[in-house]
Length: 416
Ligand SMILES: Cc1ncc(COP(=O)(O)O)c(C=O)c1O
Image (cartoon, rainbow, N blue to C red):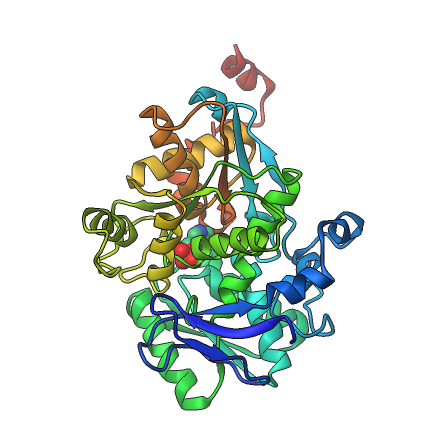
C-alpha cells in the first residue's frame, strides 16, 4: 500500500512503519492507540475531486484511494455508507437554527454507523490472511461485524454484555456469529475479547484498539462535505461512547484538509449522557489545565443509551483531542433529553433513531435553547443508529395506540 506510511501513537507521536500483512494494534512504548499515517503527496497525485464527481460508486468505496485497503477485490457486497444527509424541515426552525442537517447512518446494512468501521477492519483482516475475526461490542459494532462477515463468509466471534438490547442480540445470531453474552459490562467484555484474540491469534476488531476502525468511520466526514457540495459545516455533533466515531470524523476532515479538498475543519461536539460522561469530564479537566497531559476519567456508566454506556472510553485520548483541537466542546444531556430527542426526530423529521443515535440532536437542542449556537451556521447532527434496534426504549416515550373493536362507529367517536 504505497499510500500508507505507517502508524503514529495517539498522544506521544511515536511512529511505526507499515508492515504488509501484519496489523499493529498499539504503541509498544506507551500502549496508546495508533493512528494510520498516509502519504498525502502520493494520494494527491492519484486522486482528486473530479474523480469523485465522475464516480458512480455510492458507498464508502468511492474514497478507496484514501482508505487502508490494497484492492477492492475483497470488499463486502453490501452497500455501506453514502447515507442520506437531510436538511431539517422542522426541528431546526423550532430551536432557531436555519441550517440544521441530519446524517442518517441508521440506513447502513446492519442499521448503524459501525458498518463503516467493520468494513475496513474486515477487508484489512482478509488482506492480512485472517481466518476468524473477533470483537467486543455494546451491540452495534458486533452486529455490524457479524453482518459484514456473513456477507463474505468470514467466521465472527462476538462478545457482548448479556444486557445488550434483544434486537442487537437477534441480529448477531441471525448473521451467524458465535455469540458470547458476557455476564458483566461492555468494558469487561472488551477486556475479555482482548485476552481471547491474544490467546487464539484472531484478528481483533475492538473499537479504537484496531486502528482501522477509525479509518472506516472517517468516511462519514468525507460524505458530509461532498453531500454539502464541499461547503464545510461549521459544527458537527455526534454521540460519544468509546470516542472512536468522533475521532474518525476528525480524521476524515483532517484528511480532506491535507489533500486540499476543504479549507477549514468544523468544530466537533461530543455528546454524552450525564450517566456516561467520561469524555465530558475529561474535556472539562483539560480546559481547566491546558498544559497537563490528557487524562481520561473513568465513570460508572448506567445510561439508557446502551450503545454509549461506557466506563472508560477506549479511544478517549483521540476523542478529547478531536474536541479540543477543533475548538468544539463536550456536551452532557440527561437520559430524558435523549428519549425526548428520539420522539422529536421521529415525529418531526421521520427519522427513527435508537437512543444513542438521537443523542447528537439532544446535544444540539440543549446548546441551541441556551442560545449558544448561531442561527445561520451549518450544523450537522450524526444519527448513528436505527430506532428498531431498541424498541423498548422508544416505547417509553412513544405513547400508546387506541384499542378499539373492528367497528366504524367506534372510530368515528374517537375522530370526532
Ligand atoms: C448507535 C451508536 N452511536 C454512538 C456510538 C458511539 O461510538 P463510539 O463508541 O465510537 O464513541 C455507538 C457505539 O457503539 C453506537 O453504536
